[in-house]
Image (cartoon, rainbow, N blue to C red):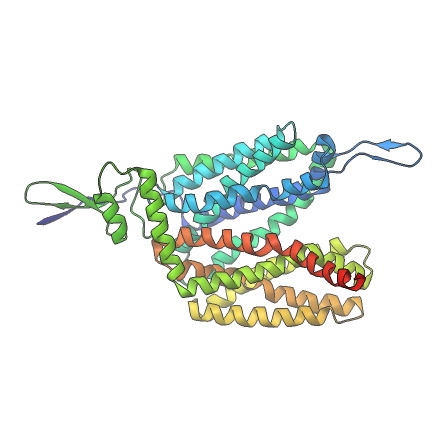
Amino acid sequence: MGSVSVQSSNPNPSWFTPERLLIIFCIINTLNYVDRGAIASNGVNGSLATCTDSGICSGGSGIQGDFNLNNFQDGVLSSAFMVGLLLASPIFASLAKSHNPFRLIGVGLSVWTVAIAGCGSSFDFWSIAICRMLVGVGEASFISLAAPFIDDNAPAAQKTAWLAIFYMCIPAGTALGYVYGGFVGSQFNWRVAFWVEAILMLPFPILGFVMKPLQLKGFGPSESKQTLTSNVSETGEVSLIDDDMLAEDQALIRGPKSTSKLWNQFIRFSQDMQELLRDQVYVINVLGYISYNFVIGAYTYWGPKAGYSIYHMSNADLLFGGITIVCGILGTLAGGLFLDRITSTITNSFKLLSAATFLGAILCLIAFLFRGLYGFIVFFSMGELLIFVTQAPVNYVSLRCVKPNLRPLSMAISTVSIHVFGDVPSSPLVGVLQVTPKIFMML
């Protein structure tokens, strides 16, 4: 049996050089988190109309004022994107095996752009809530596939540093979003903030469709869904088998033609999930990441309240927010650069993760033992700096402990897990822990 290669050559390289790719992904990530910060800002989120005892009323502002939202509805809007994100992340990761991942990012960003424009054109609570859910769908393609692309294209000695630059955009974008939303909302209208975001994002989905697409390692070119190696038999029959595919995937290609594509996708997803869950390194890394985000989520909500109660801060939100932004940017960059300096390996990543979280937690605990505000600020800042060192190493492990063709799914499941079991439930659970002792004292 002869073997004929039909893999296409690459005489026309893509316009996306590694440096351009990193810059574009960082801009997209920043815009995504600018939106997160903007919708939480006073200028965009706004407030309800209020009336004094003397009967003097002031009109509401922002989304909450225009749609007369109660606090529950207002809270739903801030987290509605999670619905789309959690449902769509595994889907986009699975589709990367049968469709070009770069084109999938283009599809996701198109959904994001349309959904954000829809937020600016919404007319009631449900219309904007649905648009916020679709924002999560658009984001899902990006968070699952961007990190593997960066990992493939970064220089060998700077892979973790490049990941750090990418994840640094999260605190930077959120901070910029608060400022941007406050300014645009107060000077123009909260709807304008969303429309400008959509306009700024629009060039990137266009690039995703019109430029020559990039390929991920472990995936054959899939513009035709089959950039494969042809095995030619003596009878002249050709069977298409991808060298990079798993044996299970090859079996699916050879299977009965009557089997639906949707069922094939489901079977493939189930097989990939089983393989991920059997990877002990991946499972341990994600469990640690869940615990980390559980603490961070509780701190984000309850930290300023604790600072106000203990130290009687008049500007607790500003102080905690400022420390978090600065330490988030510096700590994330430092973690990536340091891991590259000591050689990026899974073993070294776990060593850095253990040391940084252990020392960071101790310093944060010591900070709350200080009676004076200045001692608290110094130790708390050092603790936060160390805690954010973990961002690049933990994602490096998620990318490197699995097979190349499982990286999108590993990033998707990691993201889903840290939200579902981490930062989303942590704030209310910590609130219950604070209320329970008071109930027992009353009894």
